[in-house]
Image (cartoon, rainbow, N blue to C red):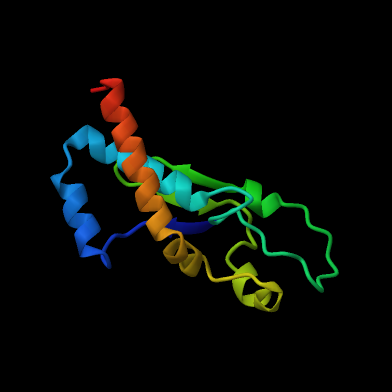
Length: 129
C-alpha cells in the first residue's frame, strides 16, 4: 500500500498558521487540505494523464483506491492508495505523463491551502464548535 504523509516540515508559514488555529479549526483545515490533495479526475492524486501513445486500456482502479485515513481524530491525515502497484506507476510510466506522487502534492499545495481556508471560513459561518 502506498502511504503519503502530509508532513508540513517545508512550509514554516503554513505550519505557524495551523498552530495558531484553535483545535477544532485545525481539524477542519487538515481534512479539507487532504481531500483537495487527493482530488478528482481534474486535479490531485486521482488525476490521470492523457493517454497519448499508451496501448493499455485504463481501468481507473488506482484512481478509486485513494483514500484518507483519519489518525488522531483528524489531526494527522494519511493519504493512502491500496493498489499494490501504485508506488511503481510514476517511475515506470513517466513517459506517458505520470508524475511522482510528492510532485503532485507540491503542485496542488496552494489550491489545497485555499480549499482549507474556505472550509474553515464555512465552518466558522455555520457556528459549529
